[in-house]
Length: 166
Image (tube, rainbow, N blue to C red; front, top):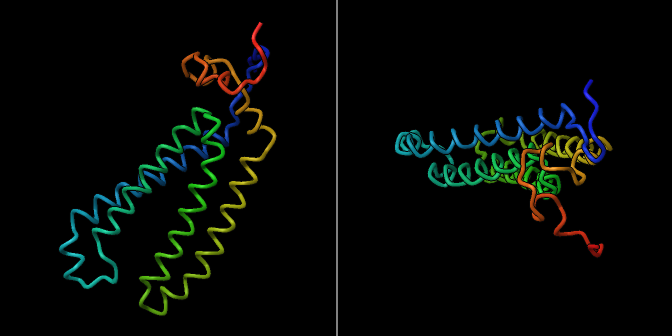
């Protein structure tokens, strides 16, 4: 294995995998938005319980937010590590609330508790992953060569350094 110079921390493999999963979840929402907008008239004719264009708008917003969060998580932006928890927990709550509002059949209503428990469990897993020592170490200040970012004060974390410069 290649030794890293001081200050560089390797990116854990599961951070790459998790970032990819978040990006794929965002891409799925973008495809859902496209499908709902494209076939909105057909869905209305079928009598679906939700407004298709509203679902398309929400899916577009969630898709963009998740893709952005996944990309920035892979780039190890410090704000992404904190915001991924907020984005995913709100996404899980939104999906459960959407089901609660628009569920009409007994089968759909029966999925509400399962979906809420699944969302809570997955958020717990994300918290556990993001608070892990290896992930925290990977997000510490690092040179630009590790993350591919430019070497300026904003991206390297120097803007938040309270120590006086000599």
